[in-house]
Length: 371
Image (tube, rainbow, N blue to C red; front, side, top):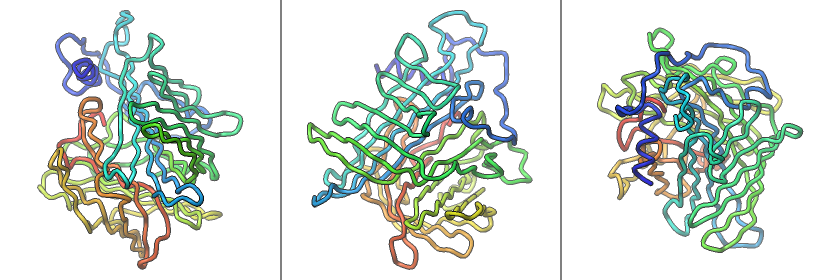
């Protein structure tokens, strides 16, 4: 299975082997355009990579002394560089990858599992009409009548079933959904189409080693697609998506510069704040800064991650605090990377004001170009 996974990953464009015919075409470049829903809830198969990234924190059951849980359910669609005219039913024209994870402080380490398969054969499928993507009985689908998402992942050690109900309109990141990943004066085409659905109300059934739990919480969904996400000299990114208790949504990310040899050097940055009933505020790179507050070293990859950070957005100073330090997701056999994806609290002036996720990539090695 690991060998097959590696071959499928190579087919996605990370160093294709000789048995794959190179396509005589270029991936389309994302350009600013007006998003149209519900069409853009669905897949965009011409582009190289796309993902639906659902994260959340689940409260402890009422009357229980158990800690909160962090959850992640992510589906990727990847278009390998295979000639679209190739008639073989075995040609991997589209791949589906999935990650599912549970962060439980009682265990102290992330429970996670992965899936990867080519589209077809009744194993994996993705819809261009609306959000509907599945692989090996893992699934994420949106009900077009009510906008509610239903997700499911059945892993060896855990099962996760959830309902995510939107409470706000989609949040179009960047310039009406066009999200730059490089400075305005850069020649790099690095950009994506990117929207979020923050402040999701979560209802979840979680079973870990036969222990069934019903929980509720708050979640966040990112949907993003691109052909060139990072410029060639980028080392990786730090990303934050937080639901504030007052209904505000905070998004912030920075692209780190590989040439400096320092994880603290930002090459590009962005942030947005949307408060209920108010227009979206976006912030220029000079108004956004990430400052490490706490580092944790993985016993598996030996990578050192800044798992707690101070995030400066305009005049506001936020701090993140991880639910637990070990939230590294080692996906080197599927998407080719190990990264830290951590359920966290958000603080301001020493007071907890929200919760969400902090993502850290490029600390355990280079980020593949397709991601």
